[in-house]
Image (tube, rainbow, N blue to C red; front, side):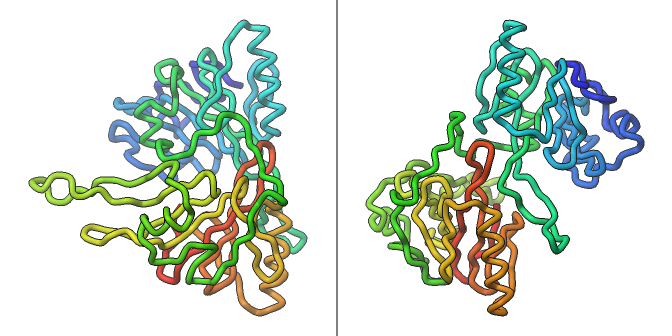
Length: 344
C-alpha cells in the first residue's frame, strides 16, 4: 500500500539504508552508488525496488520496477505492471474525486504532487516458445514515489538526478505519434559505412548539409582536465534531427574533432530501412525480433546484442531498438561504424 508522502509497503521516508535493508528482510543493494555516505541510491534487485537517499542518507524516494517490483496500490488503484493508459485514466478519475491536480512528467506519464507519484513505463519481457527471454510489444507501468520535499518536481530534485539524470532525454507531452509507412522515405544501409545520405566519418557540418536540416537539439559537455586547467573545449556527442527522425552520434575526444560514428533511426518518425527484406523501422518489435532471429539462425550469421539487450547481426554493428508508442512499442535501429562501441 502507498501512503502518499509517508512511505510504501514496509518502507518509510526518512529511513537510513540499514533500516531499509532490515525492512526488506535483510535485502542487499547489488547495484548502488554513494550508498550510506550521504546522497546515494541502492537497487534491491530481489525486491525490484530502488531506494534513493538524500544528503543525510535518509530515504526520500522509492522506484518500483515494472517487471520485478511489488504491486503497489493507492485507494484501490493498482499502479504497477499495468497498461499505462488505463492507470492514467484511473489516476485522473481519483484526482477528480479528491479535487487534486494531475500533471504530465517528462516521459508523458501522470504525476501528482499531492500524492508524491510520478509514473513511468518499461517494455514488458516474456519467455519465447524456446524458453529464452524475449521483448514484448507492450509497455507496463513503473513508478517513482517520493517524500514531500521532492514532490513538487521529482526528476529535478538533486537526489533523483543523482540516480537518473533526464536532462538529455527528449521530453514527451503525452502523445506518441507514429508516422505512417507511406510517409516514410526509404534509406539504404551499407553496413559499417553509412546509411541513407550519411557516411561514417562525416563532420557535423557535412551531416547537416546531407540532411538539409539544422539540429533540433545538441548534446555535449565540457571535459575537465587537471584542476588548474579548468574546463576544456566543448565536445559534441550527438545531434538530433526531428524532421528526418534520426540522431547522429559522434566519435570525439579531447583534441579530436567530432566525426559521425553511429546513426539512430527513430521508430516513431524515422525513415524505413530494410535488412534482407526485413523492415526494421516502425514495426512491432516482437515481430522484427522474430524475423531477425530466424534469418540470422538460418544464414549462420550469428546474433550480437547491444548494451541494452538490442539484437543485431554479428559483425555488422546494427541493433534493433524499441521506441515507446504509448501502450506499446515500435522498432527503431542504430547503425554504427566498425569501431563504434554501443552505449545507451
